[in-house]
Amino acid sequence: MRDVTKGGIGTSLRRLMPSRQAHQQEPKLTRISVALTAMLALALAITAAVTLIGLHFLHVQHFKPERQLSAATLFNLLKVAFAVAAGIGAVVALVTAYRRQRIAEFADQRHELAEQREQTRLLNERFSTAAGQLGHDNPAIRLAGVYAMAGLADDWPQQRQTCVDVLCAYLRMPYQPDPADEAPIAERLALRAGREVRHTVIRVITAHLQPDDRRAPTTAPWHGLNLDFTGVIFDGGNFNGAQFTGGQVNFTSAQFTGGEVDFRNAEFTGGRIDFSRAQFTGGRVSFISAEFTGGRVSFDRAQFTGGEVDFISAKFTSGLIDFTFAQFSGASVGFGLAEVSDSTLSFFGAKVSSGKVDFVGAKFTGGRVGFDRAQFTGGEASFLAAEFTGSRVSFDRAQFTGGEVDFSEPEDWSSPPTFPNWGNKPPSAVHIPTQQAKAP
Image (cartoon, rainbow, N blue to C red; front, side, top):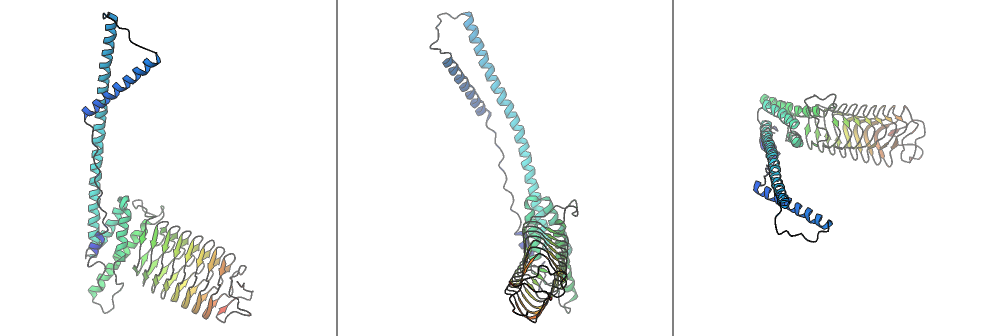
């Protein structure tokens, strides 16, 4: 299988290139002759209106005719003429001054528009260059493209989502995690180099999702952006400390096949995080000390068939964490020391057929944990030393036909889970403490 970086990735990435912004039309000045004519007409109209209104209120019926032009009348006529001339001059001066100001403003606007067009041109050129680097055959050039695209995202808020989409699209490209041992050394080295580029993409994204006090001063926050990891093959990667605080983060049908994918100390506080139909088939995926405080995190129909998935010491304080119809058939999935205080943790219809699901030392202090209609046909589900103090833990219509489900030696049984009505005793696969279990 060819590496992701070969074959049409450059073309694929360039399809995400933002369209160039349309040039804004430059403002146009009204011709000065038109402006002067309009202003004089307006001045004459105002003068006529004021005169008519004044004559109306003075109750003037007609003008007194004079057969001879007296000096006083001539003087008054001259004053009116000079006043009209002065008014016209004032209007001309006002229009000229206003036009001079507008010309200066338009010059500034033209300069600003020219700068914007030049900036947009340079940003588009940077995008094209970075996308071309990501599609290059040389891994070192692809690494440069990763950092170039991330830097462009920081400098271009209007197209930040597009730049991040390109980085996620790189991860979604077809990828072979590890060649066979008998593969030529050149092929193995090439694929390892490609893996380093992919892990760098993950590190760059994670660096931008860190809290303010841990993020580099020159690194812009990418919180709230959409991250599309649909179908991505993860053979390692570091999301340690990332804050998924908004937008939609999509791991639908992702494959966790080897290495370690680290979500330790990550925070899931809003939006939707989707691991639906994800496949955990090898390696280790760590959610140790992660915090789930809002929104919805979905592992709906996820398959845990190999490797380790650790939610050790995770905190589920609000929102919905959904393992509906998830299949546990070979992996070791650990919720040891996890705390469920005010959220809904749903395993509705989940199937445990092999492997181990571990709730050792977990604390159920609030909210709801539902294993309704879950099927335990093999493997092991251990609640050893768990604390049932406040959560509503329900196994309504759950089926226990094989394997082992161990509730023995709880740390606290004051608010025990509810089980199906087993009559005199539970199935042999279920071990509960001597205290009476609650029936639904």
